[in-house]
Length: 192
Image 1: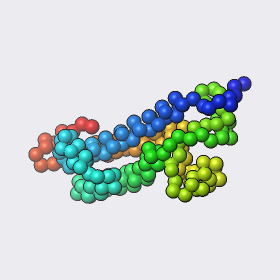
Image 2: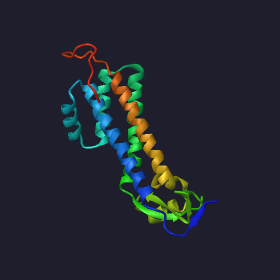
Image 3: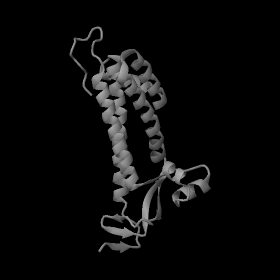
Image 4: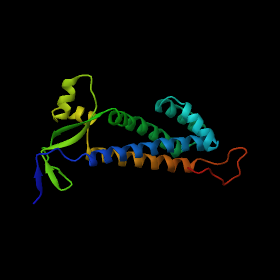
Protein backbone atom coordinates (compact mmCIF):
# COMPACT_ATOMS: atom_id res chain seq x y z
CA UNK A 1 0.00 0.00 0.00
CA UNK A 2 1.22 3.50 -0.88
CA UNK A 3 1.57 6.04 1.92
CA UNK A 4 -0.38 9.28 1.75
CA UNK A 5 0.56 12.76 2.92
CA UNK A 6 -1.18 16.07 3.37
CA UNK A 7 2.17 17.88 3.33
CA UNK A 8 3.48 19.64 0.26
CA UNK A 9 5.26 17.30 -2.13
CA UNK A 10 9.07 17.47 -2.14
CA UNK A 11 10.65 20.16 -4.29
CA UNK A 12 13.65 18.20 -5.52
CA UNK A 13 11.80 16.29 -8.25
CA UNK A 14 10.28 19.46 -9.69
CA UNK A 15 13.66 21.24 -9.67
CA UNK A 16 15.43 18.27 -11.26
CA UNK A 17 12.73 18.08 -13.91
CA UNK A 18 13.16 21.75 -14.79
CA UNK A 19 16.95 21.29 -14.86
CA UNK A 20 16.63 18.30 -17.22
CA UNK A 21 14.44 20.37 -19.51
CA UNK A 22 16.89 23.29 -19.53
CA UNK A 23 19.78 20.94 -20.27
CA UNK A 24 17.86 19.33 -23.14
CA UNK A 25 16.95 22.72 -24.61
CA UNK A 26 20.60 23.83 -24.37
CA UNK A 27 21.45 20.78 -26.46
CA UNK A 28 18.91 21.89 -29.11
CA UNK A 29 20.55 25.31 -29.29
CA UNK A 30 24.05 23.80 -29.46
CA UNK A 31 23.05 21.49 -32.29
CA UNK A 32 21.48 24.40 -34.18
CA UNK A 33 24.89 26.11 -34.00
CA UNK A 34 26.50 22.90 -35.28
CA UNK A 35 23.99 22.76 -38.14
CA UNK A 36 24.80 26.39 -38.98
CA UNK A 37 28.49 25.48 -38.96
CA UNK A 38 27.94 22.55 -41.31
CA UNK A 39 25.63 24.41 -43.68
CA UNK A 40 27.87 27.48 -43.86
CA UNK A 41 31.07 25.49 -44.23
CA UNK A 42 32.86 27.47 -41.56
CA UNK A 43 34.57 26.47 -38.34
CA UNK A 44 32.86 26.27 -34.96
CA UNK A 45 34.15 29.58 -33.59
CA UNK A 46 32.79 31.53 -36.56
CA UNK A 47 29.47 29.68 -36.50
CA UNK A 48 29.21 30.39 -32.76
CA UNK A 49 29.87 34.11 -33.31
CA UNK A 50 27.26 34.26 -36.08
CA UNK A 51 24.67 32.43 -33.98
CA UNK A 52 25.35 34.70 -31.01
CA UNK A 53 24.60 37.72 -33.21
CA UNK A 54 21.27 36.25 -34.37
CA UNK A 55 18.71 37.89 -32.06
CA UNK A 56 16.20 35.03 -31.73
CA UNK A 57 15.26 31.54 -32.84
CA UNK A 58 12.95 32.88 -35.54
CA UNK A 59 15.87 34.59 -37.26
CA UNK A 60 18.05 31.51 -36.73
CA UNK A 61 15.42 29.39 -38.49
CA UNK A 62 15.32 31.91 -41.35
CA UNK A 63 19.12 31.80 -41.64
CA UNK A 64 19.26 27.99 -41.58
CA UNK A 65 16.51 27.70 -44.19
CA UNK A 66 18.18 30.26 -46.46
CA UNK A 67 21.55 28.50 -46.34
CA UNK A 68 19.88 25.08 -46.43
CA UNK A 69 18.07 25.97 -49.67
CA UNK A 70 21.52 26.43 -51.22
CA UNK A 71 23.29 23.46 -49.63
CA UNK A 72 20.62 20.76 -49.30
CA UNK A 73 18.36 18.86 -51.66
CA UNK A 74 15.45 16.46 -51.57
CA UNK A 75 14.68 14.72 -48.30
CA UNK A 76 17.39 16.61 -46.39
CA UNK A 77 15.87 19.95 -47.41
CA UNK A 78 12.45 18.65 -46.34
CA UNK A 79 13.93 17.49 -43.03
CA UNK A 80 15.42 20.94 -42.45
CA UNK A 81 11.98 22.46 -43.00
CA UNK A 82 10.46 19.94 -40.54
CA UNK A 83 13.18 20.64 -37.98
CA UNK A 84 12.64 24.40 -38.28
CA UNK A 85 8.88 23.92 -37.75
CA UNK A 86 9.54 21.70 -34.73
CA UNK A 87 12.00 24.23 -33.29
CA UNK A 88 9.35 26.94 -33.60
CA UNK A 89 6.68 24.78 -31.94
CA UNK A 90 8.95 23.53 -29.16
CA UNK A 91 10.33 27.02 -28.54
CA UNK A 92 6.81 28.11 -27.60
CA UNK A 93 6.76 25.40 -24.92
CA UNK A 94 10.26 26.38 -23.85
CA UNK A 95 9.23 30.01 -23.35
CA UNK A 96 6.14 29.01 -21.40
CA UNK A 97 8.18 26.72 -19.14
CA UNK A 98 11.12 29.07 -18.60
CA UNK A 99 8.98 32.14 -17.94
CA UNK A 100 6.47 30.27 -15.78
CA UNK A 101 6.39 29.78 -12.04
CA UNK A 102 5.88 26.83 -9.71
CA UNK A 103 2.49 26.34 -8.14
CA UNK A 104 0.52 23.62 -6.41
CA UNK A 105 -2.68 22.00 -7.58
CA UNK A 106 -4.80 19.11 -6.38
CA UNK A 107 -3.38 15.70 -7.12
CA UNK A 108 -6.70 14.36 -8.39
CA UNK A 109 -4.90 11.59 -10.31
CA UNK A 110 -3.37 10.41 -7.01
CA UNK A 111 0.03 10.25 -8.68
CA UNK A 112 2.64 8.96 -6.23
CA UNK A 113 5.71 11.15 -5.76
CA UNK A 114 8.68 9.16 -4.48
CA UNK A 115 6.25 6.46 -3.35
CA UNK A 116 3.93 8.82 -1.46
CA UNK A 117 0.57 10.10 -2.66
CA UNK A 118 0.30 13.78 -1.75
CA UNK A 119 -2.94 15.77 -1.81
CA UNK A 120 -1.12 18.36 -3.92
CA UNK A 121 1.35 18.24 -6.82
CA UNK A 122 3.74 20.74 -8.34
CA UNK A 123 2.98 22.30 -11.72
CA UNK A 124 4.86 24.86 -13.76
CA UNK A 125 2.38 27.55 -14.81
CA UNK A 126 2.79 30.36 -17.28
CA UNK A 127 1.52 33.80 -16.22
CA UNK A 128 -1.40 34.27 -18.59
CA UNK A 129 -2.68 37.82 -19.08
CA UNK A 130 -6.25 36.63 -18.53
CA UNK A 131 -6.15 35.24 -14.98
CA UNK A 132 -9.46 33.41 -15.43
CA UNK A 133 -7.92 31.45 -18.33
CA UNK A 134 -4.92 30.63 -16.16
CA UNK A 135 -7.15 29.43 -13.32
CA UNK A 136 -9.27 27.32 -15.67
CA UNK A 137 -6.07 25.80 -17.10
CA UNK A 138 -4.67 24.92 -13.67
CA UNK A 139 -7.99 23.42 -12.56
CA UNK A 140 -8.23 21.36 -15.76
CA UNK A 141 -11.43 23.06 -16.92
CA UNK A 142 -9.85 24.43 -20.12
CA UNK A 143 -7.90 21.59 -21.75
CA UNK A 144 -6.46 23.71 -24.56
CA UNK A 145 -5.10 26.28 -22.10
CA UNK A 146 -3.91 23.50 -19.80
CA UNK A 147 -1.88 21.90 -22.62
CA UNK A 148 -0.41 25.29 -23.48
CA UNK A 149 0.29 26.78 -20.04
CA UNK A 150 0.51 24.04 -17.37
CA UNK A 151 3.36 21.55 -17.03
CA UNK A 152 3.42 18.86 -14.37
CA UNK A 153 6.74 17.26 -13.49
CA UNK A 154 5.84 14.32 -15.74
CA UNK A 155 4.97 16.67 -18.59
CA UNK A 156 8.25 18.55 -18.13
CA UNK A 157 10.06 15.23 -18.44
CA UNK A 158 8.13 14.53 -21.67
CA UNK A 159 9.15 17.95 -23.04
CA UNK A 160 12.78 17.13 -22.12
CA UNK A 161 12.60 13.92 -24.15
CA UNK A 162 11.07 15.77 -27.11
CA UNK A 163 13.85 18.38 -26.96
CA UNK A 164 16.53 15.65 -26.81
CA UNK A 165 14.94 13.90 -29.77
CA UNK A 166 14.89 17.17 -31.71
CA UNK A 167 18.57 17.77 -30.89
CA UNK A 168 19.40 14.29 -32.21
CA UNK A 169 17.51 14.97 -35.44
CA UNK A 170 19.40 18.25 -35.88
CA UNK A 171 22.73 16.48 -35.33
CA UNK A 172 21.83 13.72 -37.78
CA UNK A 173 20.97 16.28 -40.47
CA UNK A 174 24.13 18.30 -39.79
CA UNK A 175 26.24 15.18 -40.27
CA UNK A 176 24.60 14.58 -43.67
CA UNK A 177 25.44 18.04 -45.03
CA UNK A 178 27.60 17.59 -48.14
CA UNK A 179 31.25 18.35 -47.52
CA UNK A 180 32.15 19.21 -51.11
CA UNK A 181 32.74 22.85 -50.33
CA UNK A 182 35.50 24.77 -52.05
CA UNK A 183 38.64 24.75 -49.92
CA UNK A 184 37.67 21.67 -47.87
CA UNK A 185 39.16 18.29 -48.56
CA UNK A 186 36.65 15.71 -49.69
CA UNK A 187 35.54 13.38 -46.93
CA UNK A 188 36.45 15.71 -44.05
CA UNK A 189 33.78 16.97 -41.74
CA UNK A 190 33.61 19.26 -38.73
CA UNK A 191 32.62 17.82 -35.36
CA UNK A 192 29.69 18.86 -33.15
